[in-house]
Length: 473
Ligand SMILES: Cc1ncc(COP(=O)(O)O)c(C=O)c1O
Image (cartoon, rainbow, N blue to C red; front, side, top):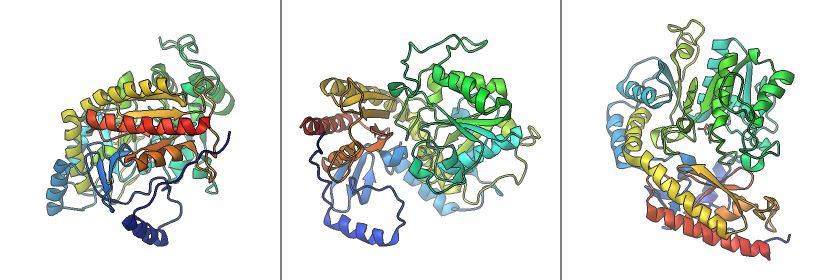
């Protein structure tokens, strides 16, 4: 196939000036692209204005962070009021209302009626580290199971359990030892070359849940050939895989993982950092399958953009007064984790989500998905449309009949399909982000309207049409 003719977006004068200043000062490993040269001045709801006055519809939401929209007034008010009273006192050592209030709410909305406790950190990756420490401390075992395609952040623990892109680990070894990766349910491109639902097998042991071959890889290959399950401390998994391509596993997948982890006394950690807090049309993605993990990790949307993460776990895992094997006083902590202003923003964010936004995510999510499926029918290069609520992935291929991917170097200067779609959308005023090898994600704020959904879908189809013409030559 020949290269397609594509030019990266023009950069405005003010944006150019700031980008040049930034380039002098900032580290070189950031993942900004020439395709989205966005220098933001102002943002509200799902609208962003850049420093040259150009307006964009934001279908990335800062990587699924501003679920309650950019700068919601209620959150601004909560931050303002809290800042006048108390900005910092270490939450690991002292007490304050916003932290308690937020913890009470999180315990209530997370899956499982059992007694829970919370640890607040500052970022998603920090909560990953904390959860793995809980598993090892409680079980006194060392091994961890995680997934191909997973993304869990950039700390050493986060990198170690991730399995998404080699560049994220290159030259950082040694990573955390004792981590074994196993296949995720990427049904569109099944690792085992099978097809759902015909791949379903006899129910797993004494359950009535049909076994899936990708899960059987864990029980019959990993547990028999590599790792004795009695030595496994924890299994960490994204209920819907995010960076890996917005992959929604079949309903049996997490039910099976729950049954398997229970059987072997393995702590089941659900990383809902991206999929949680209403994005999928329910509080948590696992709620779609009625699965209750031992630990659930929350970050991103929690405080509408202020840094905050939460590890919500069974009380027995988190508190030595409940179980002597749990973390003891001094086992873990953080200076900034759960700071008063972030917690106040969190309390208000959860109210907004609860009062209509989660419902909107389900409704508009279905609407967009239907539109995308119609677009898929009209175009050869849309291989798969998948997702739940406003966590929607679109996989772009050379031909949907063969599922063959487009060449990695789609343009003369080496741009791939994700970059071409992101740049072409940006030129038309729409911000979308890539995921997986060749997918685009739609992860807008949960505030979006039908009109905004139409606008985004129309722009996206224009872009697909343009690329389709170009690749057809
Ligand atoms: C599923 C998941 N886990 C963990 C992380 C890491 O979060 P953070 O960047 O806040 O450390 C991310 C970030 O994209 C994520 O999507």
